[in-house]
Image (tube, rainbow, N blue to C red; front, top):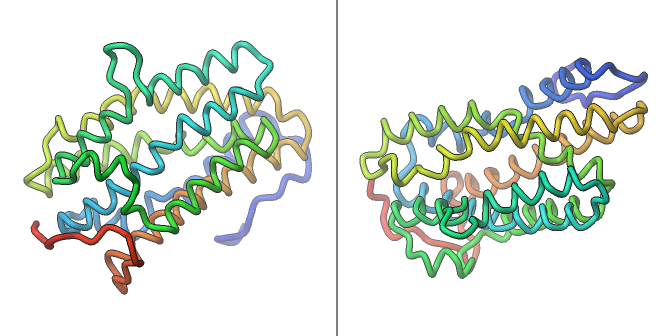
Length: 254
């Protein structure tokens, strides 16, 4: 298969073959390869560019429980609902347990952003909103199998998280482990999420057409993640065109 060519399912794949195809997509299209992430990991972003990344990623984080609630509302399988309730709790928190949203705000605050400003969503890039909102609609409107499969980018996130944490601690003196606490939790949560979703897709994608839906969902989701970084790179790196109303860094203080 040529680079960039989409995988097509012509016959029923064995479960391990389906997983192999999914991993092929991730190897080619997961946003770990995006130039913005490469700059981040090489320590070549300014504080203002990091702030822009964390601020815009907050919008994505804030919509994860919403898309999970949309999926859960359509599920008549109690096992699936119980799994997705856990995901919502992981992000929103429960009782005294801190959720991913609160830990992400620790990151934005540690980078020097005001928490109320972050929550207001006023400075989010329009392209970020378009991409993330499209993801929520996809999970709400497409088949339940596609909605579950769209979460399979978590198959690839632990490696990216480990690389990101090590790089940020090494390259940005104003970042410490407390600021990056969001990522520590995801190192255990993401594999659990991914393993459940993969097993669900392997079990329920019982025709070539259904397996194609699974692959197409991952194509869509990798595109959503890539598009968010495209927007950041265009606005804050090259050519540096920040749209009206979006966050403007105060200074390029490293």
